[in-house]
Image (cartoon, rainbow, N blue to C red):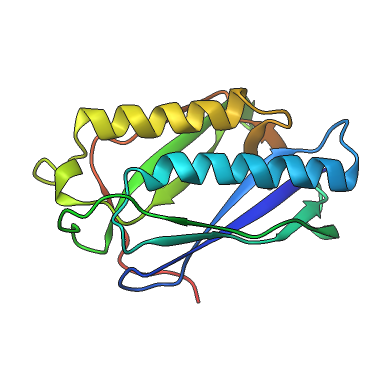
Length: 185
């Protein structure tokens, strides 16, 4: 089983934007685990908000789902406190289709391929941009935020794949911004 948290980001062109994170539920009572992952999600996005434009409003959704990692079906939903976080930077935003990309690696292999996941962080500003590449300080700060996500919390963050839940072993931040040209509705 794995917990799933959802974040809704408003205030940016193309919003609302959504992001989901998954957490190991092994050894956690439902509501206690749900509260822990909601708090950890808040901490992660508070760190990431320091890199985002101040028009971004990040809402940690109060519903935390418990998901069966073999069927990927929701088996329970726990209600936690909703939290809103504002982006911190006032410098000019980069194009709305450009987002910071965090690549999560599990270190586990299924069928000869590593189980990986990604998180996209919108709302980047020109102060983080070097000709379409995130500057080193932005990449370092984002990597540190995600390092806390997968090692600094119990339950631990991870990747929910078609093969089950896998704890994240490390995260790297891409050296170029990802370009999002469409999204599912």
